[in-house]
Image (tube, rainbow, N blue to C red):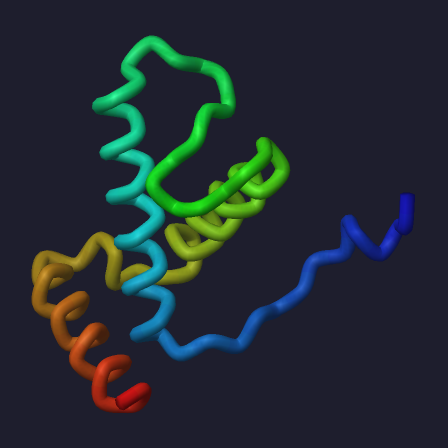
Length: 93
């Protein structure tokens, strides 16, 4: 195994993208958990992730976003998320 694979990296991404990604990941997991309440296996989620390693990578990203973005715990999170979507839609149109 390549020892570089355990190295931590920084991924520069706009805060708006981080908020949208976090919401996508958490809503995907919540939906999956509702449909699979007793399932501890690595069955498919709403986000395309074909094997356990891919899901683990998504979970690590979700955790990193949660640790990085204090906005996730803001009382106006819904407004921040809406604004983030607006910013991303405007910059990708």
